[in-house]
Image (tube, rainbow, N blue to C red; front, side, top):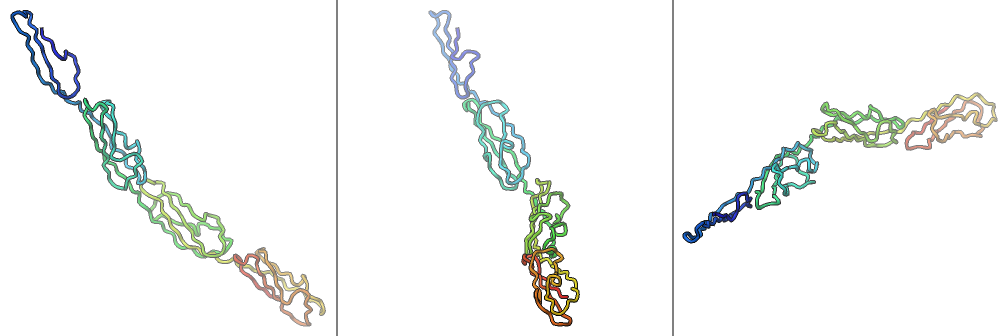
Length: 273
């Protein structure tokens, strides 16, 4: 009878194994026991990985499981070690991503490696055209006459102005800015531009009808000194000669000066009758 150290059906781990067979003769009086040994090499099973080339991504986008998603085709348990960790932000250009798979059962399974290429896309910045607008007077709302930036190329997008449309700016020098956000943010990035705008003070005008003749000895009153500001701007009227003055006989020139309360945004005015 022959007996083996490892019976039929035994599954051996990878590595070197000594197999032994022992012959026990039926007639032990005539024959001796006999033993034989052989060495058997059991190879590790190879592991195959699957990792599709990830889609291009915009610069500034961190790596995630959408890119680092290699799998083991043999359904062997283990760990994946990537050359670039999740959350890493890569520069624009071509990058090689690598992964090493180390099986939990490292005795019977080999490690495996895989490499894919990833393109980090740098969107192109567009040039904006925006001429310096003409001077406007206080009270004028900002409109397309001032906020009219255009993309040098025919790229659709949104223009965000600061200050926005219909703003009324005080007199003085101002900076207008625009941010253009293209709809196609994969191929184009935001663009910015500024221009200067001068806002002049608004002109004020005076209405003052020539007063009727008055008898000698009649003091000047509101009946004669009754000028008004056509723009309905708050302010002070200063008359020369002033109210209560007794004028000599003959023709007299009356003068009024209008001084607006908001001297920053409105000019003064003068009128005579």
